Image (cartoon, rainbow, N blue to C red; front, side, top):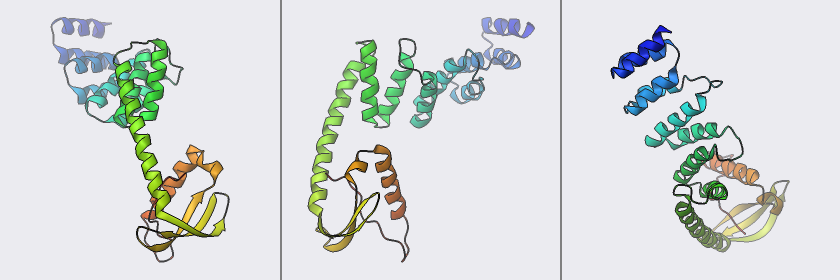
Length: 232
Protein backbone atom coordinates (compact mmCIF):
# COMPACT_ATOMS: atom_id res chain seq x y z
CA UNK A 1 0.00 0.00 0.00
CA UNK A 2 0.88 3.67 -0.01
CA UNK A 3 2.12 3.62 3.58
CA UNK A 4 4.53 0.76 2.82
CA UNK A 5 5.89 2.65 -0.19
CA UNK A 6 6.18 5.80 1.90
CA UNK A 7 8.08 3.88 4.60
CA UNK A 8 10.55 2.59 1.99
CA UNK A 9 11.00 6.07 0.56
CA UNK A 10 11.59 7.66 3.97
CA UNK A 11 14.06 4.88 4.78
CA UNK A 12 16.07 5.53 1.62
CA UNK A 13 16.10 9.21 2.51
CA UNK A 14 17.16 8.34 6.07
CA UNK A 15 14.15 10.15 7.48
CA UNK A 16 13.60 7.56 10.20
CA UNK A 17 11.10 9.57 12.19
CA UNK A 18 8.72 9.75 9.23
CA UNK A 19 9.50 6.13 8.38
CA UNK A 20 8.45 5.02 11.86
CA UNK A 21 5.23 7.03 11.54
CA UNK A 22 4.44 4.98 8.45
CA UNK A 23 5.34 1.71 10.20
CA UNK A 24 3.00 2.63 13.05
CA UNK A 25 0.15 3.43 10.65
CA UNK A 26 0.39 -0.03 9.06
CA UNK A 27 0.84 -1.78 12.41
CA UNK A 28 4.41 -2.91 11.68
CA UNK A 29 5.55 -2.42 15.27
CA UNK A 30 8.52 -4.76 14.89
CA UNK A 31 10.11 -2.75 12.08
CA UNK A 32 9.53 0.48 14.00
CA UNK A 33 11.09 -0.97 17.14
CA UNK A 34 14.04 -2.48 15.27
CA UNK A 35 14.59 0.86 13.56
CA UNK A 36 14.80 2.61 16.93
CA UNK A 37 17.05 -0.10 18.41
CA UNK A 38 19.56 0.48 15.62
CA UNK A 39 19.67 4.15 16.62
CA UNK A 40 19.96 3.50 20.36
CA UNK A 41 16.51 4.81 21.25
CA UNK A 42 15.82 1.99 23.71
CA UNK A 43 12.81 3.37 25.59
CA UNK A 44 10.97 4.32 22.41
CA UNK A 45 11.88 0.97 20.87
CA UNK A 46 10.33 -0.86 23.83
CA UNK A 47 7.06 0.97 23.26
CA UNK A 48 6.80 -0.50 19.78
CA UNK A 49 8.33 -3.94 20.31
CA UNK A 50 6.05 -4.78 23.22
CA UNK A 51 3.05 -4.19 20.94
CA UNK A 52 4.02 -6.98 18.53
CA UNK A 53 1.21 -9.57 18.76
CA UNK A 54 2.09 -13.06 19.99
CA UNK A 55 0.58 -14.83 16.98
CA UNK A 56 2.71 -13.03 14.38
CA UNK A 57 5.93 -14.05 12.63
CA UNK A 58 7.93 -11.25 14.25
CA UNK A 59 6.89 -11.95 17.85
CA UNK A 60 9.98 -14.02 18.78
CA UNK A 61 12.32 -11.53 17.12
CA UNK A 62 10.62 -8.70 19.02
CA UNK A 63 10.93 -10.58 22.31
CA UNK A 64 14.62 -11.12 21.64
CA UNK A 65 15.23 -7.41 21.04
CA UNK A 66 13.27 -6.51 24.18
CA UNK A 67 15.38 -8.99 26.14
CA UNK A 68 18.59 -7.42 24.81
CA UNK A 69 17.35 -3.96 25.78
CA UNK A 70 16.59 -5.07 29.34
CA UNK A 71 19.98 -6.83 29.45
CA UNK A 72 21.75 -3.60 28.48
CA UNK A 73 19.80 -1.82 31.24
CA UNK A 74 20.83 -4.57 33.72
CA UNK A 75 17.19 -5.42 34.36
CA UNK A 76 18.04 -9.10 34.41
CA UNK A 77 14.77 -10.58 35.65
CA UNK A 78 12.83 -8.81 32.89
CA UNK A 79 15.39 -9.88 30.30
CA UNK A 80 15.11 -13.48 31.50
CA UNK A 81 11.34 -13.46 30.91
CA UNK A 82 11.81 -12.28 27.32
CA UNK A 83 14.60 -14.69 26.42
CA UNK A 84 12.59 -17.54 27.98
CA UNK A 85 9.61 -16.52 25.82
CA UNK A 86 11.89 -16.86 22.79
CA UNK A 87 12.54 -20.53 23.57
CA UNK A 88 8.76 -21.18 23.52
CA UNK A 89 9.48 -23.91 26.11
CA UNK A 90 10.77 -26.12 23.32
CA UNK A 91 13.65 -28.55 23.70
CA UNK A 92 16.99 -26.94 22.92
CA UNK A 93 17.93 -27.32 19.25
CA UNK A 94 20.09 -25.64 16.64
CA UNK A 95 17.35 -23.12 15.85
CA UNK A 96 16.75 -21.86 19.39
CA UNK A 97 20.30 -22.30 20.69
CA UNK A 98 20.90 -18.54 20.64
CA UNK A 99 17.95 -17.90 22.92
CA UNK A 100 19.03 -20.54 25.44
CA UNK A 101 22.52 -19.02 25.39
CA UNK A 102 21.07 -15.69 26.52
CA UNK A 103 18.94 -17.44 29.16
CA UNK A 104 22.16 -18.97 30.47
CA UNK A 105 23.87 -15.57 30.50
CA UNK A 106 21.07 -14.06 32.56
CA UNK A 107 21.01 -16.99 34.99
CA UNK A 108 24.74 -16.43 35.48
CA UNK A 109 24.24 -12.72 36.19
CA UNK A 110 21.48 -13.62 38.67
CA UNK A 111 24.00 -16.01 40.29
CA UNK A 112 21.80 -19.02 39.60
CA UNK A 113 24.87 -21.06 38.79
CA UNK A 114 23.26 -24.51 38.94
CA UNK A 115 20.80 -23.49 36.22
CA UNK A 116 23.58 -21.85 34.22
CA UNK A 117 25.64 -25.03 34.37
CA UNK A 118 22.76 -27.16 33.08
CA UNK A 119 22.06 -24.84 30.16
CA UNK A 120 25.69 -24.45 29.11
CA UNK A 121 26.34 -28.20 29.32
CA UNK A 122 23.32 -28.82 27.10
CA UNK A 123 24.53 -26.18 24.63
CA UNK A 124 27.89 -27.93 24.33
CA UNK A 125 26.18 -31.22 23.47
CA UNK A 126 24.79 -29.44 20.40
CA UNK A 127 27.79 -27.28 19.51
CA UNK A 128 31.06 -27.88 21.33
CA UNK A 129 32.56 -24.44 20.58
CA UNK A 130 29.48 -22.21 20.85
CA UNK A 131 30.46 -18.59 21.60
CA UNK A 132 32.25 -18.32 24.98
CA UNK A 133 30.37 -21.22 26.57
CA UNK A 134 33.34 -23.60 27.04
CA UNK A 135 35.40 -21.03 28.98
CA UNK A 136 32.41 -19.64 30.90
CA UNK A 137 31.28 -23.11 31.91
CA UNK A 138 34.67 -23.74 33.50
CA UNK A 139 34.28 -20.54 35.53
CA UNK A 140 30.75 -21.53 36.60
CA UNK A 141 31.94 -24.99 37.68
CA UNK A 142 34.71 -23.35 39.72
CA UNK A 143 32.20 -21.04 41.42
CA UNK A 144 29.92 -23.99 42.26
CA UNK A 145 32.86 -25.94 43.67
CA UNK A 146 33.82 -23.00 45.93
CA UNK A 147 30.19 -22.64 46.98
CA UNK A 148 30.00 -26.31 47.95
CA UNK A 149 33.09 -25.89 50.11
CA UNK A 150 31.58 -22.82 51.75
CA UNK A 151 28.27 -24.61 52.36
CA UNK A 152 30.13 -27.53 53.93
CA UNK A 153 31.90 -25.19 56.37
CA UNK A 154 28.60 -23.46 57.17
CA UNK A 155 26.90 -26.82 57.77
CA UNK A 156 29.64 -27.83 60.19
CA UNK A 157 29.19 -24.55 62.05
CA UNK A 158 25.42 -25.16 62.26
CA UNK A 159 25.99 -28.64 63.67
CA UNK A 160 28.30 -27.25 66.33
CA UNK A 161 26.02 -24.35 67.24
CA UNK A 162 22.92 -26.20 68.46
CA UNK A 163 22.95 -29.04 70.97
CA UNK A 164 19.70 -31.01 70.98
CA UNK A 165 18.39 -31.71 74.46
CA UNK A 166 15.06 -33.47 73.97
CA UNK A 167 12.23 -33.90 71.49
CA UNK A 168 9.22 -31.72 72.30
CA UNK A 169 7.01 -32.25 69.22
CA UNK A 170 6.63 -34.18 66.00
CA UNK A 171 4.44 -33.69 62.92
CA UNK A 172 4.16 -34.25 59.19
CA UNK A 173 6.88 -31.71 58.39
CA UNK A 174 9.45 -32.83 60.93
CA UNK A 175 10.53 -32.70 64.56
CA UNK A 176 10.86 -29.87 67.10
CA UNK A 177 13.59 -30.16 69.72
CA UNK A 178 14.47 -28.25 72.83
CA UNK A 179 18.06 -27.21 72.11
CA UNK A 180 20.89 -25.11 73.47
CA UNK A 181 22.41 -22.33 71.34
CA UNK A 182 26.14 -22.62 72.04
CA UNK A 183 26.89 -19.25 70.47
CA UNK A 184 24.40 -17.12 72.39
CA UNK A 185 24.02 -19.44 75.42
CA UNK A 186 20.24 -19.69 75.44
CA UNK A 187 17.55 -22.34 75.19
CA UNK A 188 15.73 -22.44 71.84
CA UNK A 189 13.22 -24.54 69.92
CA UNK A 190 14.93 -26.21 66.96
CA UNK A 191 12.64 -27.27 64.10
CA UNK A 192 14.16 -29.89 61.78
CA UNK A 193 12.60 -31.10 58.52
CA UNK A 194 12.16 -34.84 58.14
CA UNK A 195 14.86 -36.63 56.13
CA UNK A 196 12.50 -37.35 53.21
CA UNK A 197 11.30 -33.76 52.90
CA UNK A 198 14.85 -32.39 52.88
CA UNK A 199 15.26 -33.86 49.40
CA UNK A 200 12.21 -32.00 48.06
CA UNK A 201 13.42 -28.60 46.81
CA UNK A 202 9.86 -27.20 46.72
CA UNK A 203 9.30 -28.09 50.36
CA UNK A 204 12.63 -26.66 51.50
CA UNK A 205 11.99 -23.42 49.59
CA UNK A 206 8.54 -23.11 51.22
CA UNK A 207 10.10 -23.83 54.62
CA UNK A 208 12.68 -21.10 54.01
CA UNK A 209 10.03 -18.55 52.95
CA UNK A 210 7.90 -19.40 55.99
CA UNK A 211 10.87 -18.79 58.30
CA UNK A 212 11.77 -15.52 56.56
CA UNK A 213 8.18 -14.29 56.81
CA UNK A 214 7.89 -15.25 60.47
CA UNK A 215 11.17 -13.49 61.24
CA UNK A 216 9.57 -10.20 60.19
CA UNK A 217 6.77 -10.55 62.76
CA UNK A 218 7.09 -9.26 66.31
CA UNK A 219 4.28 -10.19 68.71
CA UNK A 220 4.09 -11.74 72.20
CA UNK A 221 1.99 -14.63 70.85
CA UNK A 222 4.24 -15.39 67.85
CA UNK A 223 7.42 -17.43 68.14
CA UNK A 224 10.49 -15.36 67.19
CA UNK A 225 12.69 -16.88 64.48
CA UNK A 226 16.38 -16.42 65.30
CA UNK A 227 18.15 -18.47 62.67
CA UNK A 228 17.76 -20.54 59.50
CA UNK A 229 20.27 -22.94 58.04
CA UNK A 230 21.12 -26.21 56.34
CA UNK A 231 22.23 -29.18 58.42
CA UNK A 232 23.36 -32.69 57.48
